[in-house]
Length: 160
Image 1 (cartoon, rainbow, N blue to C red):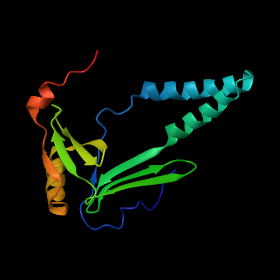
Image 2: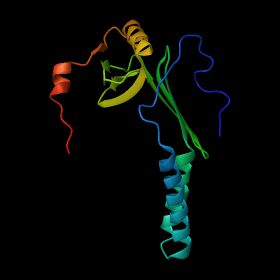
Image 3: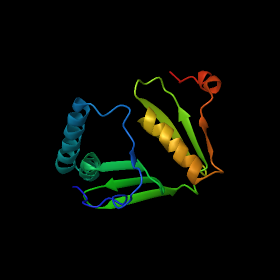
Image 4: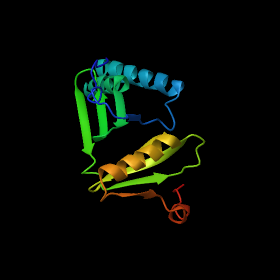
């Protein structure tokens, strides 16, 4: 399913598309399709009919498409599903922080957008990230726009 008109198509300014850090591998996608088929068959064959419902919902999530962009208006996310669409919008006035984090990736950096008690981490190319930070400073002078403190990030350890 493809929508012919995305909410930001009519905008004249720059549009920065978020990238995926690690795209889903092909064997994972095949495994998801097999799992959803197993759930549907299990719901039909066994007395647990709810498994078929979960299988159908899982298929709908596999077919969903998510577009995330930064525009002159702010952060825009558009979900395209087979049965509905959803549009999530954060204006620049609502965004209180934009923090750039270098994750030692050769091409991408992470930008953390904060709004209230919510935060979104999105990945952009290094040149796009610089331009987004300039745009954020221009659109909301009260927002905190900075780089992440590497000393604080060094102290962060993942649980094993």
